[in-house]
Image 1: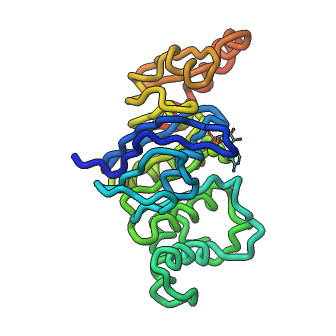
Image 2: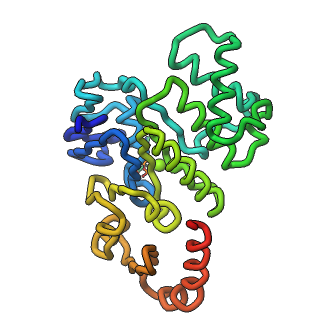
Image 3: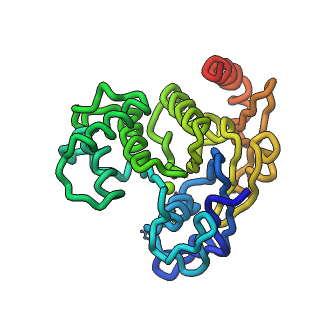
Length: 277
Ligand SMILES: Nc1ncnc2c1ncn2[C@@H]1O[C@H](COP(=O)(O)OP(=O)(O)O)[C@@H](O)[C@H]1O
Ligand SMILES: [Mg+2]
């Protein structure tokens, strides 16, 4: 199968300090994959480099067999930035945020045509929040804001969407709803690449994970690659992996392990079981 995107020998950094060197990564059509690693390990930098928002020091990015010029965004790609980086006091409605995606993609003048309004409505409907179309973006919940940006990323029918820490500011219920929505979009043919530092409620639910810490460590299905050794290498701290039926639960080891085992584990397992039904 022809890859949708290839990262070859990519090195990125800021002010002479490298964040990662020599990263190679291939993404295939139809994949739903997660980039997993601790805070500050370079996940956002890698995503931004792929999207042409950060200029690589070295290396190449190929989209569907064509090399991209440095600093140029690949075509047919959507991006959902980390919600923490967005200015929510900006006075626009959910529908207007989605329509901004139309202007970016089609380079047309920024007046609101009926066509764009219809596209925005359809996309808000696709992500399940058409009812908030006229609300100011700042009034929405974190989960709804996330979906507005997902709808905006879907303008122009992209082949692949990149989401940077899509679940970091939401509670367990909202995280699971978003993961279900992403799985549905993936079933409809969209390739999805997200970053996360959250192992239990996000990473273990993904079909494919890429462990990253200032460079690629390992990739595969959670069941195969979430081992204590790989997780320790990724997160730089001791981790213990539990298997319960077909579920994986990861806890950091050390002094709190006994506490987690005795007090939290049964509750977490019950919660995960009911959420994933
Ligand atoms: N614009 C920037 N200027 C300077 N340093 C940056 C910038 N963005 C990120 N960094 C640094 O690069 C490293 C990787 O950051 P980032 O890619 O945001 O990691 P992650 O997304 O995994 O948390 C961190 O040490 C961070 O402080
Ligand atoms: Mg980040």
